[in-house]
Image (cartoon, rainbow, N blue to C red):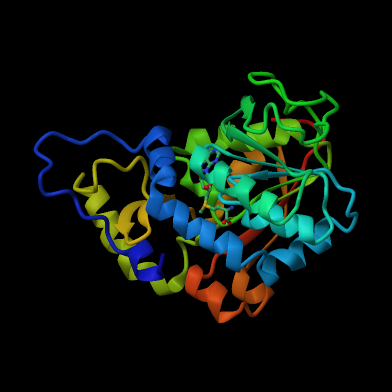
Length: 299
Ligand SMILES: C[S@@+](CC[C@H](N)C(=O)[O-])C[C@H]1O[C@@H](n2cnc3c(N)ncnc32)[C@H](O)[C@@H]1O
């Protein structure tokens, strides 16, 4: 998605005589199961792999290749498969969209990768995780629960040495309280002091002040897209399907980390971290990386 699309005021649907329902996680999941969206992320998984900026932070915070990593919102496997090739072989990756998980599994299989675990799970309820590889010989689970059995909670307390939610998946959860629930869930399954890396799009980018001022005016008059939950939300369509995205400001991200037991470590934009290839820049805009650590006591 390009920057103009992300920051343009949300149009109110013309046909809306009765207020349309708010965007729910079911709608977001259906959007990610849409064939156009699946193809978009499958292409990225096949042709892009890990970005330079991602590699820099992953190397910095996970120098030990034996680290047990949890990747949230793995999509079609771009990051999980990239992690494997970078030498991380203890990775559990999950996504709530079944079509994405199917693509991720196919990609891993095509590349002869046998011990990446993919789960279908919602970040806001990790105990509901169902292992899509049930019945296949994917090796033991990282938390020692043995081979998959459907419906069993595989994601236990303190299992992981770190978590990743890359390319803005956290911000595709509608509603601030639900995003905090996801942050608490990731906190629960990580060991104390574990790093957590995620990305957002900046709402407080000086270049976008005018667009957001227009959007604020709509909200002040109650004339915003009624499907949105909060100021900063976007819902738009393009050739890759429908996208829900919340754009937070800095204060909000720091508050949400603190409220869910994460200590802020550092943040930087992708462009500050690395000069990405034209392919990566065409695929996605600049974004901000946030690094947090699990504080000793959970919130
Ligand atoms: C922008 S895509 C990024 C996919 C992949 N990480 C990548 O970089 O190519 C965001 C992913 O997060 C997933 N996602 C969004 N909300 C989720 C939730 N509540 N639980 C699990 N996955 C979620 C979507 O299904 C989607 O695959």
